[in-house]
Image 1: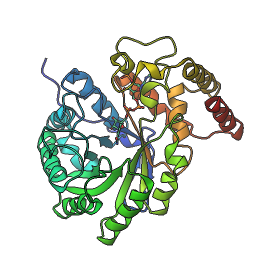
Image 2: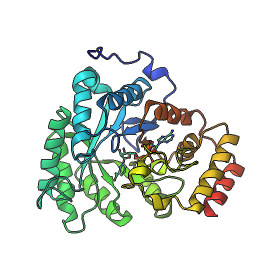
Image 3: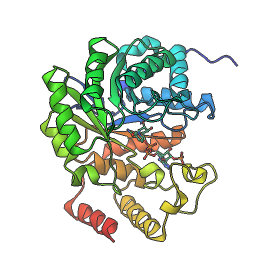
Length: 334
Ligand SMILES: NC(=O)c1ccc[n+]([C@@H]2O[C@H](COP(=O)([O-])OP(=O)(O)OC[C@H]3O[C@@H](n4cnc5c(N)ncnc54)[C@H](OP(=O)(O)O)[C@@H]3O)[C@@H](O)[C@H]2O)c1
């Protein structure tokens, strides 16, 4: 059957999605954003990827997070998204906030990885072609490159903005002291760093401990959390074993060894607490990240519309009693 022409839900901005200001900027981001790291590659059924993208936008998710090498294969998540742009989203381009990144392995040879000017600029040109876009809303340096002068990477970001290929720039996974230098370098060139993207979830608290969250706030930069569900650990996915179609079953990015008995006990205890709050564990894990203003948005991954719809319920209750917060710390610290 020929796909019917997509028209987004007319109520997409009245469906409960909330938007937060991104640092000291004019940009508002949805509290929940959708990441295309997994489940949007050329190994995945296009119909499912498309259904998730449509559902997300219909629910007010305006921010889609990509990177050059998301797939597998490398580049194929951007191709999938490009096809969705062509088939459905193009008339709504101005309602969308689309990101991509460069800095991890992408193409063979010395220029397809890390943070040189050549790598970043060539990579973004490729990404734009794959996604059928003239510009991205935000382009990230995907990771700090210890072997390239930081100024070279940052100047490439500045020039990308000047060339109109990205409206804003961001940093991902930069150590705190390099982020300090980067924020200053960019600011001095009138290119404010819009977002810091870091791994943050109930099990992974480094952004808090290392002061990344506070540093972003002080710089007027938003913080966007990736892997907010610890790749699925902070959901009911692994409560009763490892399902065949799960990320852990592939044992690639989420290793089976990470599901130790201690971790499983913590997941079970968190799951009980979530139930007492009237939430699923996934909802509670996301709500916990959104409980205060230090986090602008969380970028979730999903393998089905059902997961997405569960996760979206998180925003209905993001307040915690101090007893609940203490209980969470107790469970995690055990
Ligand atoms: N900057 C960086 O270096 C970086 C690194 C990693 C990720 N990211 C970004 O962050 C995004 C999210 O990362 P992530 O995919 O690791 O996020 P995540 O939200 O922590 O994990 C997503 C996975 O959790 C499972 N899941 C989600 N909702 C569920 C639910 N309601 N019930 C049961 N299971 C559920 C699904 O696993 P199954 O597939 O098993 O169903 C899903 O694929 C990426 O797409 C990417 O955009 C950025």
